[in-house]
Image 1 (cartoon, rainbow, N blue to C red):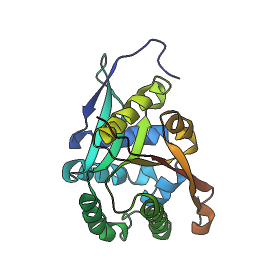
Image 2: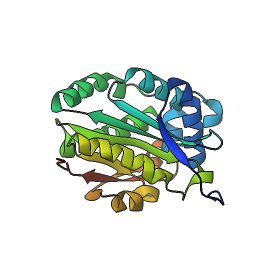
Image 3: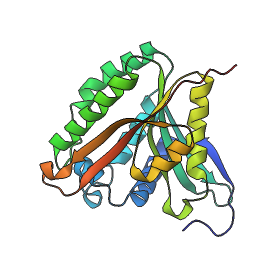
Amino acid sequence: MPPTKSISVSLHPALPTDAPTLDEIHSKAFPNDLLLEVMYGPREENTVGLAQDLEKAIRENPNARFTKAVDDESGRVVGWSWWIIYRDAEAHVKAEQEAVKKRATPPPRSICPRACLEYRQLVVEKRERWIGGRGVAILQILVVHPEYQGCGIGTKLLMAGVQEAKSLQLPAWLEASRAGYTLYKKCGFRDVGENLDLDLAKYGATGQKHGFCMLMDAVHVD
């Protein structure tokens, strides 16, 4: 349930030291994320998996934009986003070449490395078809703490990335969950008609992972 009073939230660049907090917010917002558990292992057995990846990306990836939403009154981090901004085709192609090896290596505590690798490849195929080899802004993650959902924080985080994309005259891309689909459509993304569907039963788990590929075309700003 969102706070009963209106809150003031400001956006700031996330720091490497914020990674454990970002991971904790993600786990609270998506407590039953089966794919994340399959990829990284049960959270109670692996408290550093995603946090470690986030810290490394914040510290080392020059194309990454990690933004945290902070409750101005309490100083609490209540949401965050991770965008990747490829300013031109050269930057995108170079990053993809460097990512090939990483994608082929599942997290060390992965319950099912095959599921991890096949999902990563599915994402790559969809992105290559729609945005491959050109400048683009890609939303990797957008998450708001459950106690602060419904306050417009997600929209604020989303539009910060969209505005940067527009200022650079870049298209923007994301893979949406069912929960976020309506927000993204409202903010100008269109469903391209291709889904990211993974039957986790193939890998000894239960349930399915559903995602929707969405695109916002480049807007030329004077």
